Image (tube, rainbow, N blue to C red; front, side):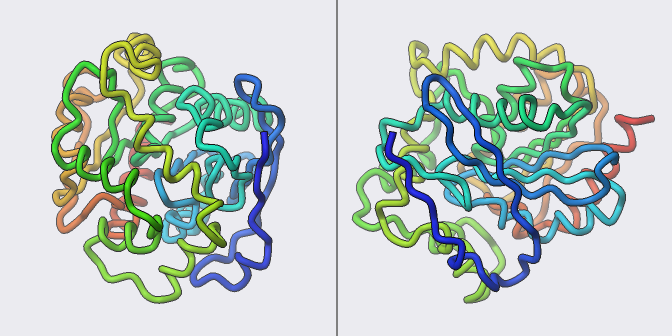
Length: 304
């Protein structure tokens, strides 16, 4: 497997990004070792929160949340998914599968870091990967905050908004990462912030993972990801730690998925679910302060 590695100087002086990278070698389904980057901030013995990003972002998406959560005493782990951020980027689109993404994150969190009693914050593909892990290894998790995400099984239509996004992602000549982030955010990002999102991708050859992600969302029952997610739902339904949905009011991609999660996950009963006002798909950009409050309150309930 040929993997690209973004030069370190691409990340020098990024706006609002003071965090030092950590690295681990991870493997999944015969991929061979790949270097995966992650942020590790806050007290080493603090309660753990894992922040999983989606596509086409990286842990930079959490720059307004990492510091406040760490200052509140949490150990904050924010990985860059393989293909994104400072993590290695396999050059072939065929190198990326749903199962491999789950395996790479699982190897980092539970192999290398051996994390216990995790509060998962998952948005977009951070939820597609993270919720699968909650279903597979529920004993590793204390709580979940799900934001603009879902765990699709291929048994329901993905919706016109997602289909339009997937078609665009597969046909556009140059994949405009910063424009995609701005287009799914209600607030105006600064030039420096837009540059932060472009930093991991010196040219189109580095974007195979970003291109492939939309094609990996299960859209039929026999899709391998759908089959695996149906099995994961068996564990997810019985997860009884605090499970909170905090969805944006302006995200057509995942609209309504919170109702499914709330209705089916045991730990979602009697939780203070919230619809975030003036918040689009990338809720971390539009409602970071409120999301920090939600994570801290959820962590407190989990540890009570």
